[in-house]
Image (cartoon, rainbow, N blue to C red; front, top):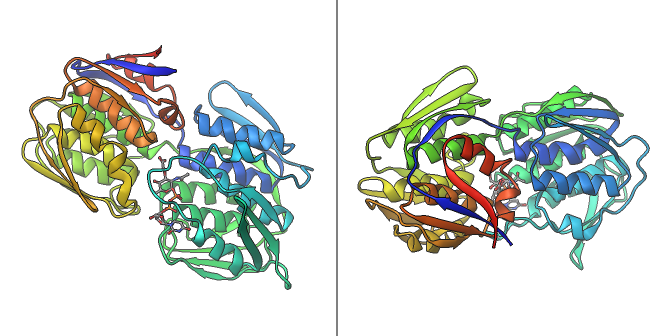
Length: 421
Ligand code: EPU
Protein backbone atom coordinates (compact mmCIF):
# COMPACT_ATOMS: atom_id res chain seq x y z
CA UNK A 1 0.00 0.00 0.00
CA UNK A 2 1.33 3.47 -0.79
CA UNK A 3 2.00 5.81 2.13
CA UNK A 4 3.70 9.14 2.68
CA UNK A 5 7.07 9.23 4.40
CA UNK A 6 7.76 12.64 5.88
CA UNK A 7 10.86 14.03 7.60
CA UNK A 8 9.62 17.05 9.49
CA UNK A 9 11.17 20.27 10.62
CA UNK A 10 12.09 22.01 7.33
CA UNK A 11 10.43 25.42 6.88
CA UNK A 12 8.42 25.82 3.67
CA UNK A 13 9.83 28.33 1.17
CA UNK A 14 8.90 29.31 -2.40
CA UNK A 15 5.62 29.35 -4.27
CA UNK A 16 2.77 26.95 -4.90
CA UNK A 17 -0.02 27.13 -7.46
CA UNK A 18 -3.51 26.11 -6.38
CA UNK A 19 -5.55 23.78 -8.61
CA UNK A 20 -9.20 24.05 -9.60
CA UNK A 21 -11.75 23.59 -6.82
CA UNK A 22 -12.59 19.95 -6.11
CA UNK A 23 -16.07 20.68 -4.83
CA UNK A 24 -16.88 22.82 -7.87
CA UNK A 25 -15.48 20.23 -10.31
CA UNK A 26 -17.42 17.36 -8.74
CA UNK A 27 -20.65 19.35 -9.22
CA UNK A 28 -19.90 20.70 -12.69
CA UNK A 29 -18.93 17.30 -14.17
CA UNK A 30 -22.28 15.61 -13.37
CA UNK A 31 -24.10 18.83 -14.39
CA UNK A 32 -22.56 18.42 -17.86
CA UNK A 33 -25.08 15.59 -18.33
CA UNK A 34 -27.72 18.33 -18.75
CA UNK A 35 -25.90 19.91 -21.67
CA UNK A 36 -26.64 19.25 -25.31
CA UNK A 37 -23.19 19.91 -26.71
CA UNK A 38 -19.52 19.92 -25.77
CA UNK A 39 -18.52 21.46 -22.42
CA UNK A 40 -14.87 22.48 -22.54
CA UNK A 41 -13.83 22.86 -18.92
CA UNK A 42 -10.52 24.33 -17.80
CA UNK A 43 -8.76 24.12 -14.42
CA UNK A 44 -10.16 20.66 -13.64
CA UNK A 45 -8.11 19.24 -10.74
CA UNK A 46 -6.23 15.97 -11.37
CA UNK A 47 -7.59 14.06 -8.37
CA UNK A 48 -9.19 10.67 -7.91
CA UNK A 49 -12.70 12.02 -7.19
CA UNK A 50 -12.64 13.68 -10.61
CA UNK A 51 -11.26 10.53 -12.31
CA UNK A 52 -14.06 8.48 -10.76
CA UNK A 53 -16.77 10.88 -11.90
CA UNK A 54 -15.36 11.02 -15.44
CA UNK A 55 -15.30 7.20 -15.45
CA UNK A 56 -18.95 7.13 -14.41
CA UNK A 57 -19.96 9.54 -17.17
CA UNK A 58 -17.93 7.53 -19.71
CA UNK A 59 -19.68 4.36 -18.60
CA UNK A 60 -23.00 6.18 -19.09
CA UNK A 61 -22.07 6.96 -22.69
CA UNK A 62 -20.51 10.43 -22.52
CA UNK A 63 -17.59 11.21 -24.81
CA UNK A 64 -14.74 12.60 -22.73
CA UNK A 65 -11.46 14.02 -23.94
CA UNK A 66 -8.71 15.13 -21.57
CA UNK A 67 -5.88 17.47 -22.45
CA UNK A 68 -2.79 18.43 -20.51
CA UNK A 69 -3.15 21.41 -18.18
CA UNK A 70 -6.42 20.39 -16.55
CA UNK A 71 -8.67 20.70 -19.61
CA UNK A 72 -11.54 18.26 -19.99
CA UNK A 73 -14.13 18.14 -22.76
CA UNK A 74 -17.40 16.42 -21.94
CA UNK A 75 -19.97 15.70 -24.61
CA UNK A 76 -23.23 14.23 -23.32
CA UNK A 77 -25.23 14.90 -26.50
CA UNK A 78 -27.45 11.86 -27.26
CA UNK A 79 -26.44 10.00 -24.11
CA UNK A 80 -29.37 7.64 -23.44
CA UNK A 81 -30.77 7.08 -19.93
CA UNK A 82 -28.44 4.62 -18.18
CA UNK A 83 -28.07 3.72 -14.53
CA UNK A 84 -24.59 4.71 -13.37
CA UNK A 85 -22.39 1.83 -12.22
CA UNK A 86 -23.18 1.31 -8.52
CA UNK A 87 -19.62 0.30 -7.56
CA UNK A 88 -18.20 3.47 -9.09
CA UNK A 89 -20.93 5.62 -7.52
CA UNK A 90 -20.18 4.22 -4.05
CA UNK A 91 -16.56 5.37 -4.31
CA UNK A 92 -17.42 9.05 -4.02
CA UNK A 93 -19.76 11.41 -2.23
CA UNK A 94 -20.45 13.76 -5.10
CA UNK A 95 -22.00 10.99 -7.19
CA UNK A 96 -25.28 12.10 -5.56
CA UNK A 97 -25.31 14.97 -8.08
CA UNK A 98 -26.09 12.34 -10.72
CA UNK A 99 -29.55 12.05 -9.16
CA UNK A 100 -30.24 15.74 -9.84
CA UNK A 101 -28.64 15.53 -13.28
CA UNK A 102 -30.62 12.45 -14.37
CA UNK A 103 -33.84 13.87 -12.97
CA UNK A 104 -33.26 17.14 -14.83
CA UNK A 105 -32.35 15.51 -18.10
CA UNK A 106 -34.55 12.40 -18.24
CA UNK A 107 -37.23 13.18 -15.66
CA UNK A 108 -36.20 10.11 -13.65
CA UNK A 109 -33.12 8.84 -11.83
CA UNK A 110 -31.81 5.65 -10.29
CA UNK A 111 -28.46 5.98 -8.55
CA UNK A 112 -26.76 3.99 -5.77
CA UNK A 113 -26.39 5.76 -2.42
CA UNK A 114 -23.16 7.76 -2.50
CA UNK A 115 -19.95 6.77 -0.71
CA UNK A 116 -17.05 9.10 0.07
CA UNK A 117 -15.51 10.25 3.34
CA UNK A 118 -17.54 8.92 6.26
CA UNK A 119 -16.43 11.14 9.14
CA UNK A 120 -20.07 11.67 10.21
CA UNK A 121 -23.61 10.67 9.27
CA UNK A 122 -24.31 12.39 5.97
CA UNK A 123 -28.05 12.25 5.27
CA UNK A 124 -29.57 13.34 1.95
CA UNK A 125 -33.08 14.15 3.19
CA UNK A 126 -32.78 17.78 2.06
CA UNK A 127 -31.85 16.69 -1.47
CA UNK A 128 -34.94 14.45 -1.43
CA UNK A 129 -37.05 17.34 -0.07
CA UNK A 130 -35.99 19.42 -3.07
CA UNK A 131 -36.66 16.70 -5.66
CA UNK A 132 -40.05 16.04 -4.08
CA UNK A 133 -40.92 19.75 -4.20
CA UNK A 134 -40.17 19.63 -7.94
CA UNK A 135 -42.78 16.88 -8.28
CA UNK A 136 -40.68 13.72 -8.10
CA UNK A 137 -41.53 10.65 -6.06
CA UNK A 138 -38.35 9.49 -4.37
CA UNK A 139 -37.78 6.05 -2.89
CA UNK A 140 -34.66 5.01 -1.01
CA UNK A 141 -34.40 1.22 -0.87
CA UNK A 142 -31.77 -1.52 -1.24
CA UNK A 143 -29.01 1.06 -1.23
CA UNK A 144 -30.50 2.86 -4.24
CA UNK A 145 -32.21 6.22 -4.70
CA UNK A 146 -35.04 5.92 -7.19
CA UNK A 147 -36.68 9.17 -8.32
CA UNK A 148 -39.61 9.20 -10.72
CA UNK A 149 -41.99 11.89 -11.91
CA UNK A 150 -45.10 12.15 -9.71
CA UNK A 151 -48.61 12.25 -11.19
CA UNK A 152 -48.27 15.89 -12.35
CA UNK A 153 -44.73 15.60 -13.75
CA UNK A 154 -41.88 17.91 -12.75
CA UNK A 155 -42.42 21.64 -12.25
CA UNK A 156 -40.51 24.49 -10.60
CA UNK A 157 -41.42 25.16 -6.98
CA UNK A 158 -40.29 26.83 -3.77
CA UNK A 159 -37.97 24.80 -1.49
CA UNK A 160 -37.06 25.99 1.99
CA UNK A 161 -34.07 23.97 3.22
CA UNK A 162 -34.25 22.95 6.88
CA UNK A 163 -30.45 22.96 7.15
CA UNK A 164 -27.94 24.91 5.11
CA UNK A 165 -26.65 22.17 2.85
CA UNK A 166 -24.07 22.59 0.10
CA UNK A 167 -24.99 19.27 -1.50
CA UNK A 168 -28.76 19.82 -1.42
CA UNK A 169 -28.43 23.37 -2.80
CA UNK A 170 -26.30 22.13 -5.70
CA UNK A 171 -28.45 19.07 -6.39
CA UNK A 172 -31.67 21.09 -6.48
CA UNK A 173 -30.09 23.65 -8.83
CA UNK A 174 -28.97 20.85 -11.16
CA UNK A 175 -32.37 19.14 -11.07
CA UNK A 176 -34.30 22.39 -11.63
CA UNK A 177 -32.41 23.97 -14.52
CA UNK A 178 -34.37 22.15 -17.26
CA UNK A 179 -37.65 21.85 -15.34
CA UNK A 180 -40.44 24.21 -16.53
CA UNK A 181 -41.38 27.09 -14.25
CA UNK A 182 -39.46 28.86 -11.50
CA UNK A 183 -37.69 27.12 -8.61
CA UNK A 184 -36.74 29.16 -5.56
CA UNK A 185 -34.31 27.71 -3.01
CA UNK A 186 -34.51 29.45 0.35
CA UNK A 187 -31.91 29.04 3.10
CA UNK A 188 -29.49 28.03 0.35
CA UNK A 189 -25.79 27.47 1.00
CA UNK A 190 -23.48 30.25 -0.22
CA UNK A 191 -20.15 28.48 -0.79
CA UNK A 192 -17.99 29.70 -3.69
CA UNK A 193 -18.45 26.39 -5.51
CA UNK A 194 -22.22 26.97 -5.59
CA UNK A 195 -21.63 30.26 -7.38
CA UNK A 196 -19.20 28.47 -9.70
CA UNK A 197 -21.74 25.78 -10.60
CA UNK A 198 -24.38 28.46 -11.28
CA UNK A 199 -21.91 30.40 -13.45
CA UNK A 200 -21.08 27.21 -15.38
CA UNK A 201 -24.75 26.43 -16.00
CA UNK A 202 -25.55 30.05 -16.91
CA UNK A 203 -22.67 30.01 -19.41
CA UNK A 204 -24.37 27.00 -21.02
CA UNK A 205 -27.72 28.85 -21.18
CA UNK A 206 -29.36 28.34 -17.78
CA UNK A 207 -31.17 31.17 -15.95
CA UNK A 208 -29.98 31.05 -12.34
CA UNK A 209 -29.80 34.15 -10.17
CA UNK A 210 -28.90 34.77 -6.56
CA UNK A 211 -26.17 32.12 -6.20
CA UNK A 212 -23.92 33.25 -3.36
CA UNK A 213 -26.92 34.54 -1.38
CA UNK A 214 -29.37 32.44 0.62
CA UNK A 215 -32.15 32.75 -1.97
CA UNK A 216 -31.47 31.23 -5.39
CA UNK A 217 -33.93 31.50 -8.27
CA UNK A 218 -33.86 29.15 -11.23
CA UNK A 219 -36.06 29.78 -14.27
CA UNK A 220 -36.34 26.54 -16.21
CA UNK A 221 -35.01 26.61 -19.80
CA UNK A 222 -35.71 24.13 -22.61
CA UNK A 223 -32.11 23.11 -23.24
CA UNK A 224 -28.48 23.95 -22.53
CA UNK A 225 -25.80 24.35 -25.18
CA UNK A 226 -22.08 23.56 -25.01
CA UNK A 227 -19.46 26.15 -24.14
CA UNK A 228 -16.22 26.95 -22.35
CA UNK A 229 -15.82 27.32 -18.59
CA UNK A 230 -12.90 27.73 -16.19
CA UNK A 231 -13.27 26.38 -12.64
CA UNK A 232 -12.37 28.62 -9.69
CA UNK A 233 -9.30 27.90 -7.53
CA UNK A 234 -9.79 25.54 -4.59
CA UNK A 235 -10.46 27.45 -1.36
CA UNK A 236 -9.60 24.49 0.86
CA UNK A 237 -6.45 23.47 -1.00
CA UNK A 238 -5.25 27.08 -0.69
CA UNK A 239 -6.21 27.14 3.00
CA UNK A 240 -4.34 23.87 3.55
CA UNK A 241 -1.08 25.33 2.18
CA UNK A 242 -1.61 28.52 4.18
CA UNK A 243 -2.10 26.52 7.37
CA UNK A 244 0.92 24.37 6.50
CA UNK A 245 3.17 27.45 6.36
CA UNK A 246 1.71 28.72 9.64
CA UNK A 247 2.28 25.38 11.36
CA UNK A 248 5.66 24.47 9.87
CA UNK A 249 7.09 28.01 9.50
CA UNK A 250 8.59 29.65 6.40
CA UNK A 251 7.54 32.03 3.66
CA UNK A 252 5.35 30.91 0.75
CA UNK A 253 3.47 32.65 -2.04
CA UNK A 254 0.22 30.80 -2.68
CA UNK A 255 -0.71 31.56 -6.30
CA UNK A 256 -4.03 31.20 -8.13
CA UNK A 257 -6.36 32.01 -5.25
CA UNK A 258 -9.37 34.30 -4.85
CA UNK A 259 -8.39 36.21 -1.67
CA UNK A 260 -12.05 37.05 -0.95
CA UNK A 261 -12.78 33.30 -0.54
CA UNK A 262 -9.92 33.03 1.93
CA UNK A 263 -10.88 35.93 4.24
CA UNK A 264 -11.95 33.83 7.19
CA UNK A 265 -8.81 31.68 7.07
CA UNK A 266 -6.58 34.70 6.47
CA UNK A 267 -8.07 36.49 9.49
CA UNK A 268 -7.59 33.46 11.76
CA UNK A 269 -3.97 32.91 10.72
CA UNK A 270 -3.22 36.61 11.29
CA UNK A 271 -4.84 36.40 14.72
CA UNK A 272 -2.53 33.48 15.47
CA UNK A 273 0.55 35.48 14.55
CA UNK A 274 1.26 34.59 10.90
CA UNK A 275 1.90 37.43 8.44
CA UNK A 276 -0.57 37.12 5.58
CA UNK A 277 -0.35 39.51 2.63
CA UNK A 278 -3.07 39.56 -0.01
CA UNK A 279 -2.44 40.28 -3.71
CA UNK A 280 -4.91 40.30 -6.58
CA UNK A 281 -4.84 36.53 -7.10
CA UNK A 282 -2.21 35.35 -4.63
CA UNK A 283 -1.56 35.31 -0.90
CA UNK A 284 1.81 35.28 0.85
CA UNK A 285 2.05 33.57 4.24
CA UNK A 286 5.06 34.01 6.52
CA UNK A 287 5.59 32.67 10.00
CA UNK A 288 8.68 32.92 12.16
CA UNK A 289 7.76 33.37 15.87
CA UNK A 290 5.56 31.01 17.87
CA UNK A 291 1.85 30.98 17.00
CA UNK A 292 -0.72 32.34 19.48
CA UNK A 293 -3.82 30.56 20.73
CA UNK A 294 -7.18 31.06 19.01
CA UNK A 295 -10.80 29.97 19.00
CA UNK A 296 -12.55 28.73 15.89
CA UNK A 297 -16.16 27.87 15.22
CA UNK A 298 -16.85 26.11 11.94
CA UNK A 299 -19.81 27.51 10.00
CA UNK A 300 -21.23 27.51 6.49
CA UNK A 301 -19.57 30.04 4.13
CA UNK A 302 -18.57 32.81 4.73
CA UNK A 303 -17.76 31.33 8.15
CA UNK A 304 -14.72 29.22 8.93
CA UNK A 305 -14.97 26.02 6.81
CA UNK A 306 -15.36 22.65 8.50
CA UNK A 307 -13.00 21.33 5.80
CA UNK A 308 -10.21 23.42 7.43
CA UNK A 309 -10.87 22.20 10.96
CA UNK A 310 -8.00 19.70 11.15
CA UNK A 311 -5.50 21.94 9.38
CA UNK A 312 -6.07 24.86 11.76
CA UNK A 313 -6.09 22.25 14.53
CA UNK A 314 -2.43 21.42 13.76
CA UNK A 315 -1.54 25.11 14.09
CA UNK A 316 -3.27 25.12 17.48
CA UNK A 317 -1.36 22.06 18.70
CA UNK A 318 1.82 24.14 18.39
CA UNK A 319 0.44 27.53 19.47
CA UNK A 320 1.12 29.09 22.84
CA UNK A 321 -1.85 28.70 25.21
CA UNK A 322 -5.19 26.92 25.09
CA UNK A 323 -7.15 26.98 21.82
CA UNK A 324 -10.67 25.81 21.10
CA UNK A 325 -12.48 24.50 18.04
CA UNK A 326 -16.25 24.21 18.01
CA UNK A 327 -17.55 22.10 15.15
CA UNK A 328 -21.07 23.03 14.10
CA UNK A 329 -21.44 21.10 10.84
CA UNK A 330 -20.19 17.55 11.60
CA UNK A 331 -19.90 16.87 15.32
CA UNK A 332 -17.94 13.63 14.97
CA UNK A 333 -15.29 15.07 12.68
CA UNK A 334 -12.67 15.44 15.46
CA UNK A 335 -12.43 11.68 15.73
CA UNK A 336 -10.93 11.51 12.25
CA UNK A 337 -7.63 12.84 13.60
CA UNK A 338 -7.73 13.35 17.35
CA UNK A 339 -5.98 10.06 18.28
CA UNK A 340 -3.40 10.55 15.55
CA UNK A 341 -2.55 14.06 16.78
CA UNK A 342 -2.23 12.68 20.31
CA UNK A 343 0.14 9.97 19.05
CA UNK A 344 2.31 12.77 17.70
CA UNK A 345 2.48 14.51 21.07
CA UNK A 346 -0.45 16.93 20.85
CA UNK A 347 -2.61 17.69 23.87
CA UNK A 348 -6.20 17.59 22.62
CA UNK A 349 -9.40 16.87 24.56
CA UNK A 350 -12.71 16.43 22.80
CA UNK A 351 -15.98 17.05 24.55
CA UNK A 352 -19.00 16.85 22.25
CA UNK A 353 -18.77 19.61 19.66
CA UNK A 354 -15.67 21.21 21.18
CA UNK A 355 -12.01 20.30 21.06
CA UNK A 356 -9.70 21.97 23.55
CA UNK A 357 -6.10 22.04 22.41
CA UNK A 358 -3.29 23.00 24.77
CA UNK A 359 -0.30 24.01 22.72
CA UNK A 360 2.92 22.00 23.03
CA UNK A 361 6.48 23.02 22.12
CA UNK A 362 6.92 20.18 19.65
CA UNK A 363 5.15 17.39 17.78
CA UNK A 364 7.02 14.13 17.20
CA UNK A 365 6.96 11.89 14.13
CA UNK A 366 4.76 8.77 14.32
CA UNK A 367 2.98 6.21 12.15
CA UNK A 368 -0.52 7.52 11.61
CA UNK A 369 -3.41 6.87 9.25
CA UNK A 370 -5.76 9.20 7.39
CA UNK A 371 -9.43 8.52 8.08
CA UNK A 372 -10.74 11.08 5.61
CA UNK A 373 -9.46 13.58 3.09
CA UNK A 374 -9.08 16.68 5.27
CA UNK A 375 -7.93 14.82 8.39
CA UNK A 376 -5.31 13.24 6.11
CA UNK A 377 -4.14 16.67 4.96
CA UNK A 378 -3.91 17.75 8.60
CA UNK A 379 -1.70 14.74 9.39
CA UNK A 380 0.62 15.61 6.53
CA UNK A 381 0.98 19.14 7.96
CA UNK A 382 1.56 17.69 11.42
CA UNK A 383 4.26 15.41 9.97
CA UNK A 384 5.95 18.36 8.25
CA UNK A 385 5.94 20.32 11.52
CA UNK A 386 7.05 17.40 13.70
CA UNK A 387 10.50 16.39 14.77
CA UNK A 388 11.59 13.10 13.17
CA UNK A 389 9.91 10.76 10.74
CA UNK A 390 6.17 10.36 10.12
CA UNK A 391 4.38 7.77 8.00
CA UNK A 392 0.86 8.57 6.85
CA UNK A 393 -1.20 5.56 5.72
CA UNK A 394 -4.53 5.43 3.84
CA UNK A 395 -3.36 8.14 1.48
CA UNK A 396 -6.06 7.25 -1.06
CA UNK A 397 -8.27 9.54 1.03
CA UNK A 398 -5.86 12.44 0.56
CA UNK A 399 -5.48 11.77 -3.16
CA UNK A 400 -9.24 12.16 -3.56
CA UNK A 401 -8.86 15.87 -3.25
CA UNK A 402 -5.28 17.19 -3.40
CA UNK A 403 -3.63 17.37 -6.80
CA UNK A 404 0.07 16.47 -6.74
CA UNK A 405 0.41 17.09 -2.99
CA UNK A 406 3.85 15.49 -2.79
CA UNK A 407 5.18 17.40 -5.82
CA UNK A 408 3.84 20.74 -4.61
CA UNK A 409 5.22 20.29 -1.08
CA UNK A 410 8.57 19.02 -2.36
CA UNK A 411 8.88 22.18 -4.46
CA UNK A 412 8.48 24.13 -1.19
CA UNK A 413 11.42 22.25 0.32
CA UNK A 414 9.40 19.70 2.31
CA UNK A 415 10.88 16.25 2.75
CA UNK A 416 7.95 14.07 1.75
CA UNK A 417 7.90 10.96 -0.46
CA UNK A 418 5.18 8.57 -1.65
CA UNK A 419 6.55 5.13 -0.87
CA UNK A 420 5.21 1.56 -1.07
CA UNK A 421 4.86 -0.06 2.34
N1 EPU B 1 -27.46 17.65 6.02
C1 EPU B 1 -28.66 17.12 6.35
N2 EPU B 1 -29.45 16.65 5.33
C2 EPU B 1 -29.07 16.72 4.03
C3 EPU B 1 -27.82 17.26 3.71
C4 EPU B 1 -27.03 17.73 4.73
O1 EPU B 1 -29.05 17.05 7.52
O2 EPU B 1 -29.85 16.31 3.16
C5 EPU B 1 -26.59 18.17 7.10
C6 EPU B 1 -25.26 17.41 7.20
O3 EPU B 1 -25.40 16.27 8.02
C7 EPU B 1 -24.36 18.47 7.77
C8 EPU B 1 -24.89 19.77 7.16
O4 EPU B 1 -26.22 19.48 6.73
O5 EPU B 1 -24.53 18.55 9.16
C9 EPU B 1 -24.11 20.30 5.98
O6 EPU B 1 -23.90 19.26 5.02
P1 EPU B 1 -23.72 19.58 3.48
O7 EPU B 1 -24.87 19.02 2.73
O8 EPU B 1 -23.43 21.03 3.31
O9 EPU B 1 -22.43 18.73 3.12
P2 EPU B 1 -22.15 17.92 1.80
O10 EPU B 1 -22.78 18.60 0.65
O11 EPU B 1 -22.40 16.47 1.98
C10 EPU B 1 -20.08 19.32 1.15
C11 EPU B 1 -18.65 19.04 0.79
C12 EPU B 1 -17.88 18.62 2.04
C13 EPU B 1 -18.00 19.71 3.09
C14 EPU B 1 -19.46 20.07 3.35
C15 EPU B 1 -19.64 21.26 4.27
C16 EPU B 1 -18.82 18.22 -1.47
C17 EPU B 1 -18.75 17.07 -2.39
N3 EPU B 1 -18.62 17.97 -0.19
O12 EPU B 1 -20.59 18.11 1.68
O13 EPU B 1 -16.54 18.51 1.63
O14 EPU B 1 -17.42 19.27 4.29
O15 EPU B 1 -20.11 20.38 2.10
O16 EPU B 1 -19.03 22.38 3.75
O17 EPU B 1 -19.01 19.35 -1.88
C18 EPU B 1 -14.38 17.61 1.59
O18 EPU B 1 -14.18 18.30 0.58
O19 EPU B 1 -13.50 16.98 2.19
C19 EPU B 1 -15.74 17.52 2.10
C20 EPU B 1 -16.11 16.61 2.99
